[in-house]
Image 1 (tube, helix red, strand yellow):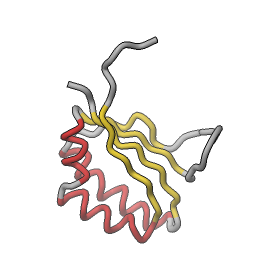
Image 2: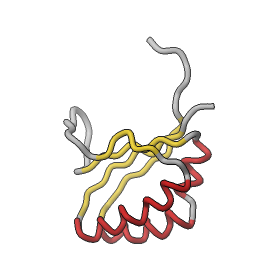
Image 3: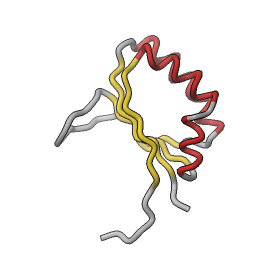
Image 4: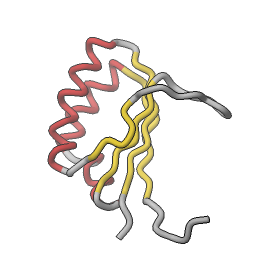
Length: 100
């Protein structure tokens, strides 16, 4: 079974309010076994557009990644984020096929 991922790009408008979102999203992330692979850090946009913060979160599978997003715990956190930041979030299935 392949893992599931959230790929998130965020522009934070209100850093203080965003801290409340981060504290609240931890409840959902703990419940669904989220593992941060990327949480901000240095980056270079080589093509296309970008936002100020990038995050990649790993889950045990795609269904769990979706369940976390649609959970009541994350819905409560999302309400806090929506006034503090603009985000692009995709949930994507990992790849277990052949590699070059």
